[in-house]
Amino acid sequence: MTFSSYLKYLRIRYAKILLRRSLKEIKEISFEIGYKDISHFYHDFKYFTGKTPFKYRMKCRKYILQNFSRTLSKKIYSNSKKSTKEKKN
Image (tube, rainbow, N blue to C red; front, side):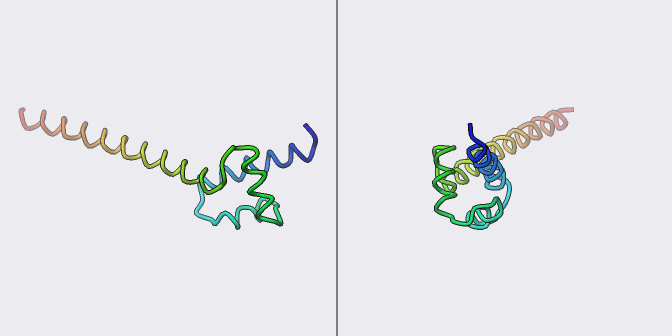
């Protein structure tokens, strides 16, 4: 792997973190990680991930929401079991 390829890899890796964790626009993220042209960012991102930045962000958000709703429903279910046991006693 050449130095420039490795640098692109690191930039895209950081972009993935920002896409998952921040509410910044994709254009902002591309400039923050060092791309001067957003089309190059899209091209490199799709090359390394197989998805556009937008699709990657939506997939991550969908996954987070699904896990959050599962966790929340488990907590509600376990709390309802506890309250039922307390009523019986």
